[in-house]
Amino acid sequence: MAKTKTIYTGQDVLDFINSYVENDQKKADSLHLIELMQEWSGFEPKMWGPSIIGFGNYHYQYASGHEGDAPILGFSPRKAAISLYVYSNTEKSEKLLESLGKYKMGKACIYVKKLVDINIPILQQLCIESIKYIQEHHECACRDKD
Image (tube, rainbow, N blue to C red; front, side, top):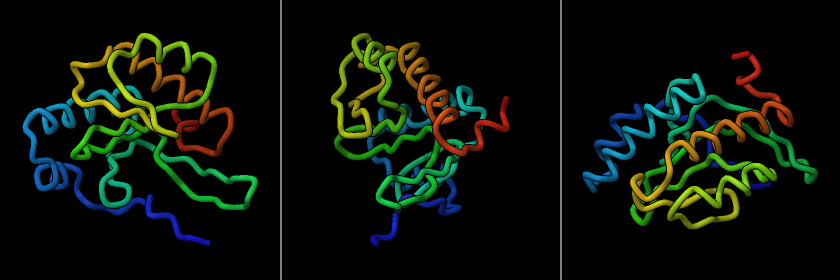
């Protein structure tokens, strides 16, 4: 079975942003996302794998038997777009996406070019919905926050 790359690394988040993110707008957006996601989740930012900034953690296990840990909320300031790991496949999340703004949807993440392209209060609601979903379906650090 393949080993997951998305594991907590201990790398410094600000060092990562300053060394990896070349675009000034993306750097500013990344710093703003850190503030927002830290506030919304109640967790400090931590590096997961080589390029994901995550907040909190939860344990998952698929029907296939594959299991692991992942951040509750997260993002990655990739060159093409910012990947937001904030989506849970719920009816409410689907409805919220209609008002999010300019984005592309991947299998498990939302891609945005710049934060000004999206509605931040809707992003907050998506994050809260995702935290709620994870609390209900997985063992997570977010349960300790209640």
